[in-house]
Image (tube, rainbow, N blue to C red; front, side, top):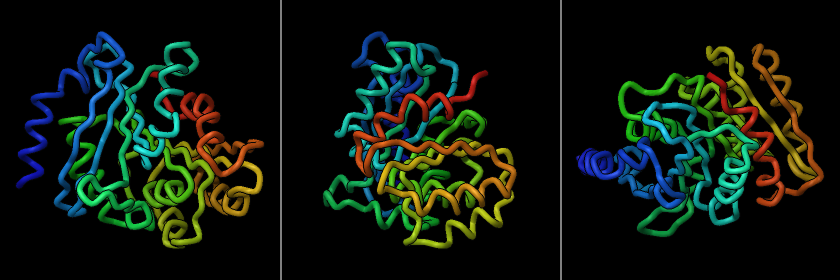
Length: 247
């Protein structure tokens, strides 16, 4: 399959930069495209490896990845890491914009799409992490707005991640996410849910109550910010200190 060919090339060409010993800031960055058989789309991925070791450690996956990069998230993470304000980790920014058509597929991916879960489980995570894959305790997922809906759906439907950050989650397009959480067999999840002012306040309490009913660790964050990247970037220090597990 075309994906498998690309995956092998990427692993051979970039393995030293994905999980090797980066010497400079440029060496810590890698970008590539996955031609997904599952989604029938070309997915752009950018990785930032802040750990100078071959040992697989904490990995944080971020949806809306290209938008997050374009709006300062990567720069914020770099600065926080260099200043010692967050633990070192590896970051995977997953774009929602099809490389070939330039169409933004976020609504297709984020509205309770089981194929998007399969893309993570069968294509993305195995490519990024290789085999054997990382223990889910050290794997995190961040979603903003409808990406928070996507993260909530993942939390109920897959055991890939144990740590989640739902930043300004808007859940109304898909009630299946709440059902998935209610009937999930996942244990010991760590969930951060945030909202700004005039933002996602209406969705925080139902999500919080549902997660707490499952016995999960839940942290609520309320900011003075709006439903925008400035607000989400300002939260990253608290978010990443919550998500990244100490070994």
